[in-house]
Length: 362
Image (cartoon, rainbow, N blue to C red):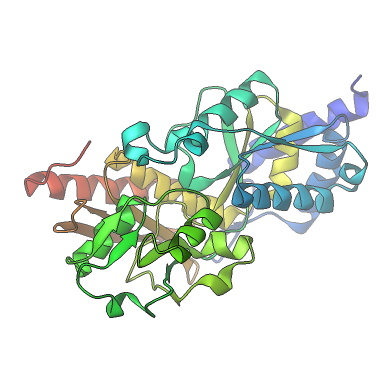
C-alpha cells in the first residue's frame, strides 16, 4: 500500500512539474535553469515518489536498445539509491514488428512506428512503467495516454562511413554498392555521388557489420551514436561531417515515455531529463510534423545549441537525390521557439517543393 508520505511526495513532484512547465525557472544566457535549491528539493520528493514498487523498463531486444535500457537503469540507480535494492528495477524485452521483418524496407511495411507499437501497447496495458526509445524511431504523434517527458543527454549526431575496401566516400568507384535502409542517407549520397548503387540493408548494428565483412556490399553508413553506445566506434572508417550527411530527426537522442497520470514514473524521469536535448528534439520533430513526411520521404533535421541560441538545419529531398531543399533557422532555447522554428522551416520546404512541382509522399 502506498504510504501517505509517498503520496504527498508524488503530489509535490507533479506540482513542481507544472511549475516548470509555466517557466518558474531562472533564465541564464537564454537557457532555462532550475535553481540549485529547487533541484535538490525535486530530488528529495522524486526519491520518495519512486520508492513504492518495482519499476519496469520496456525496451526492444537488440544490443543497442538494451545498451540504452541499461544506461537508463544505471542513471535511475544513481539518482535514487533505493532503486539499487534487489527487485526495484526490471528490464522487460519486447519484440516489435520492425525487429521481426528484416527483409523489406520500412517504407514497405508501415514505417518506423513498427519499432514502437508493441512497446506502446505494453506501456498502456501496465506491463511496463517506462519505455526507452531511440527517438528517431518514435512516430511524430504519440499514442493517446502516453507522454514523453524525458530525453537523456544526446550523443554525437553524425553518421559514419564503414568499408573494408575504401577509406572514404570519395574513393568509391562508379557502381559501388552501398548498403543502407535509410532513404535520408540514400538521397544525400546520390545527390553527391549519382553513380553509386544503394541496396536495402537492415538488421541491428552487429548484423550490418557482419554482412559488410561477408561482402554483401562495398560500404555502409551507420549512426556514430549507436557505435559509441556499443563500444564499436573503432569500426568507423571515416566520420562524416554534418555538411556531408545531415542527420536524421532526433538521431543520437534517447527518449523515455510513461503513461499520462503516472506520477511515480514522471517524478523519476524529471530527474533524468536533459533539457537542451529535449528542446532540440522538440524542434526537429516539429519540423517533421510540419512536413507530414512518411518513411518514403527523405527528411533530415538537426537542432543544436550554438552560443546560447537554438540553431536548426532542415532538409527534404527526392529519393534519387536529384532535388534537394534545405533551410536554416535560429531562435532562443525555449519550447515555444523550438516548436515555431521547426514548424516554420517545415512549412517553407513543403511550400518550395510543391511550387517546384516536386511530388513527395505527403
